[in-house]
Length: 193
Image (cartoon, rainbow, N blue to C red; front, side):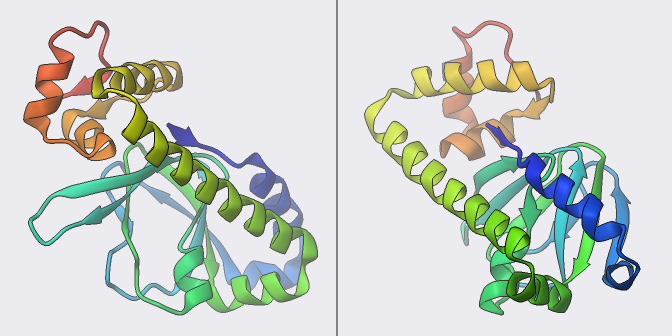
């Protein structure tokens, strides 16, 4: 599923109209397959997606990737690292060309302290992600993989984004080989090899 949070785009419009905040904000355009945040590496910025889709994944020691989320317009990236003052928990990579607003980490933390609307929006986003993670975990336990794949493909088809088999298998937590077996009986799959 591609998560979106349009409230941040509205908040950004207000923040970007303030001359004082413009020193801490920059718009950045990125091509597909560009990494914004790297797992276990320091980052100096928090990002808000204006356009495009990214994947957020954890790379395990065995080389396998587990995709936590596909994120779209209005979603924040790097907020956990800024709040916790840690290195990247996961890697974030653009799947499509992406336009982001890059926010200095110190200014992001200042906004959390001083701007109640911004703080509330961040809290709501984080609560939504936590709830989504719990729902996704329960579905992975309660439903078959073929059912989960059919639901995922329906949502992705509606979004019009093309995903690789590696991305789909990483999101479902299975191997590409297992995904190929499941796809054999599926119609209109939205992916590339």
